Image (cartoon, rainbow, N blue to C red; front, side, top):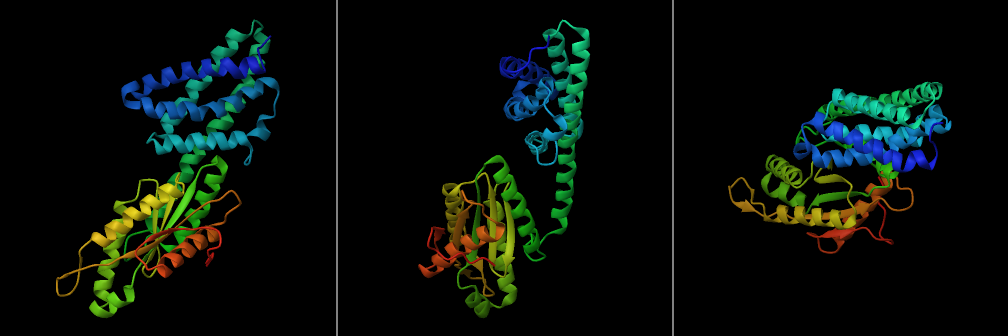
Length: 322
């Protein structure tokens, strides 16, 4: 008889993952190069394998791997991780081929009945095929997103534009909810920018906006999204970032803007400051409009408190949802 239940999903899943990781490490070029990413991949593959092994207990694989199923979410997350780590679809397919091999060996060792083994392999193959297809589809979705990013640029600053900001923020909120991860936004507004334009002209104002956009990009991480909200306002989407981290990034940007020697038409250095508001996804359901509204409310408080400062949204502040 095949071993199922806790006997399969406990020590057995660890054994399968250990053997799988060993072979994947060799295929990826050794532990020195890929040790860190492999540990993350192993942790990410665990829930996928758990759902695959559920086929041994007669669970509905089709239901588990439907669009909203937990197994589907696990497979999608694994695909996203491997893409983030710089692997190709070919690498991803190799991961699942190796997983299929290790699970097959486990089935052979766990059963003394050839018919039981054949039936189990069929169920497992179906589950692995579904998980693999979802993970591969994630690569295609990400590639489409990459193409979208190329055309969703603000023509002046080269940052993402207003439309892309909203689309991407909705996606990041859903991802943060799905994986129970933090997500924050930072809204930046240039202080007294109209005065700068009136004093030096709109052409120099455009130059200043480009320089501020460059400062934002220099202080952004690879996973962050930097967009021009409109006029002299900018928004940064900060995945995997709670409020303390958002405040730190906001303060770093404020200091960088203040210290930068902006040029005027007389070639003299001119100081510019920025007010910054921060907000994060809370325990309650937060929409993109709510999140931007809270960051804007915190920004409004920073303006009212004297400008050139970073304020975090708190209960009682206005939510200036657009």
